[in-house]
Length: 157
Image 1 (cartoon, rainbow, N blue to C red):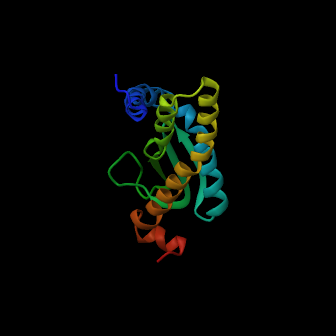
Image 2: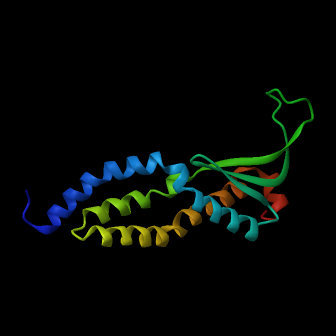
Image 3: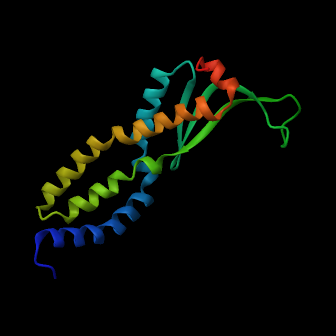
């Protein structure tokens, strides 16, 4: 066993990473609920002219827009059908800070009560990070990936 405290901390952190990520992945749909809720508030209040709702489907966040698009011709849709533009974002790629925080906290040589306090406070401090990421990706998709028709309707061209 290493004698230096930093070595013990690094080894313990590496050992805690796998269980932390496993639990995080298994509980992801529950852990992402507050993130999806805050994304809903930010997008519908700040960009209400473009976003109608944000809906969580497991680990995916569906962005429901106000834009009506022609339905794809290769499908079961009748000719000249239109539908509301909805796209999905994988929220997990923005929320991986929580299992990292848990692994680092559990590896620290402190009492369990202190660890619990640090995990709760740290997760609250990390909450804006995935909200920011999902919000920015939603706006990026709308402006740059949905074509000039949507960008024109948003007034960003």
